[in-house]
Amino acid sequence: MSGSSNIVTAMKKVLQSWPLGLNSTFRASATANLKQFCPQNAQKDPLPTGVSSERTNPVRPQKVCSFL
Picture 1 (tube, rainbow, N blue to C red):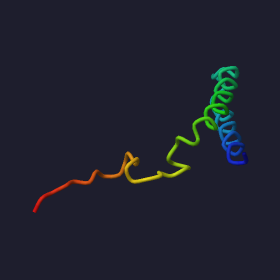
Picture 2: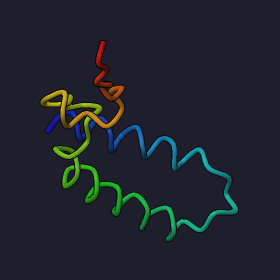
Picture 3: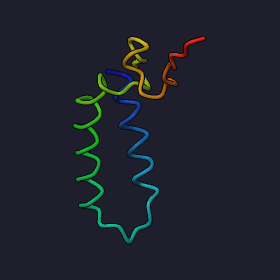
Picture 4: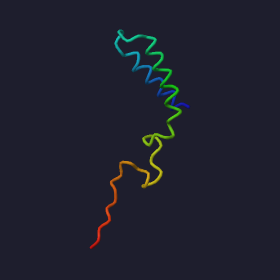
């Protein structure tokens, strides 16, 4: 859980640095939404978890079959 607490701390710093014109209720709501969204979707994110196989990697160049 330390990874998600580091994310929450970093997001709080970002939200606190936003201009004061932004409603504090909006910032609190955004923070709560991020705290809920990040752990729920962490296992689907290929950036921290990596890609399990070449076939599921959406950014891998597609193999081209050519006949000689």
